[in-house]
Image (cartoon, rainbow, N blue to C red; front, side, top):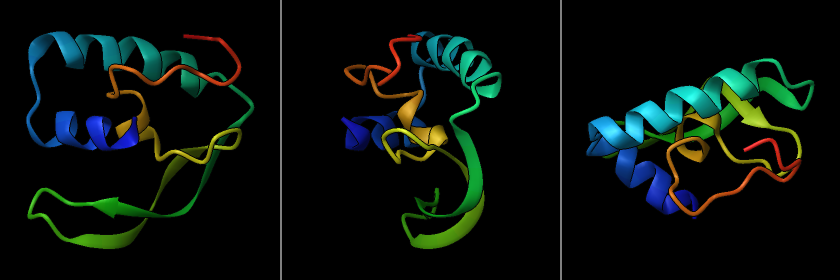
Amino acid sequence: DILNGWENYFIPNPTTEEEARKRAEICLSCPSLKKGKILAFLKDKTITEITGTYCGECGCPSVAGVRSKDKKCDLEKW
């Protein structure tokens, strides 16, 4: 599921981005959202460690998790 989220991050479309914004708003108010070092794919196709947010329940980087069409929130919030 998370690979689909990264793909949608690299190749955005308006429908996916609108859904990602809605999901991200929910995640921002969730106590399970954590900040820290995560591995991330960058737009130049490299993988690097960045400071960002991730889900404390499933461990997915938020930027990709909210963009995955088949991903479901482990806490059933979206």
